[in-house]
Image 1 (cartoon, rainbow, N blue to C red):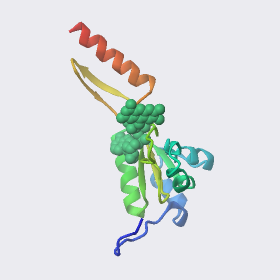
Image 2: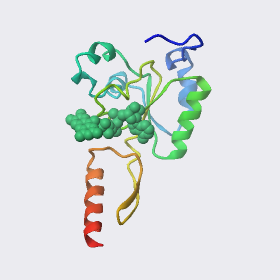
Image 3: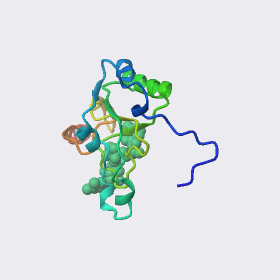
Length: 150
Ligand SMILES: Cc1cc2nc3c(=O)[nH]c(=O)nc-3n(C[C@H](O)[C@H](O)[C@H](O)COP(=O)(O)OP(=O)(O)OC[C@H]3O[C@@H](n4cnc5c(N)ncnc54)[C@H](O)[C@@H]3O)c2cc1C
């Protein structure tokens, strides 16, 4: 895809002080193992023979797994500070490469944010939990049983 004239290529974590970056993110779970990072850089794009060759080599530099909004904000602020691309990731079940880090950087894995805050009849406040996780199933069951109850 053609880049606009004023396009400034982002810095990736490979070209900055990785230790300094990790220090900024201290206390937040991070994954630095390259095999795990490669896995968490994928979704189901490989269903598409068109996307397969375009996305096969795309990978992030670091995965962070926050547990609350404050940690998400800290990750975002750090990425802004270092001008690092930030890619949000849920369960990674998208089919078109939506959560694939096209230019490296930090992958914000939200799967630990799977709390059910409250449930009222027909309404629930939940964190961005996994679409197909058992928690979602239990949430759905809970909603269904409460809806039946009321
Ligand atoms: C076997 C199979 C069956 C499927 N069936 C259906 C179906 O019936 N209906 C349907 O609609 N889809 C279906 N999908 C597609 C996919 O499961 C859905 O699009 C799902 O909602 C993606 O959620 P995810 O958490 O996996 O998102 P990801 O793939 O992780 O991310 C998708 C996009 O959302 C962004 N994102 C993720 N979480 C957040 C967040 N908390 N805040 C902001 N942005 C975020 C990502 O950056 C990315 O751009 C199917 C996929 C598979 C593999």
